Image (cartoon, rainbow, N blue to C red; front, side):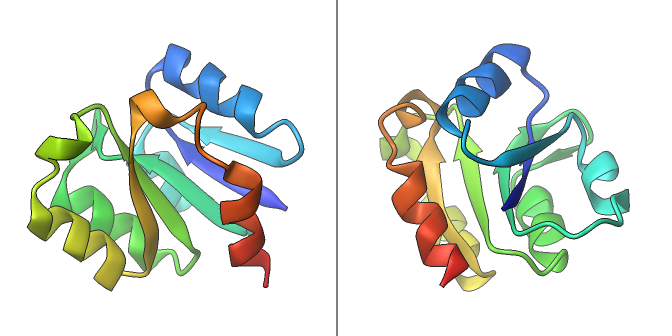
Length: 116
């Protein structure tokens, strides 16, 4: 399974890459790089805040690619605006996850839901 990770922070990307060792991970540092990628992707994990996009714009652009996605944010989960979480889910997103929880997430379980 090929998973896109749209993340500009090297440290955050390394943490994700460590959690996703069983998968073919393709990294993009900007939303533009991701949206211009033409090869097949099975899933996307994207940071809410990127150098060329933020918030709702990121969610809308990621969802247009037509692959299941998860949105990550450095904001404390208790501070995610309800409307942002709702938009992620209504746009086809699987979840919105606090970056501090990246290691504790059962990525294999979440990814298997996508593969079904």
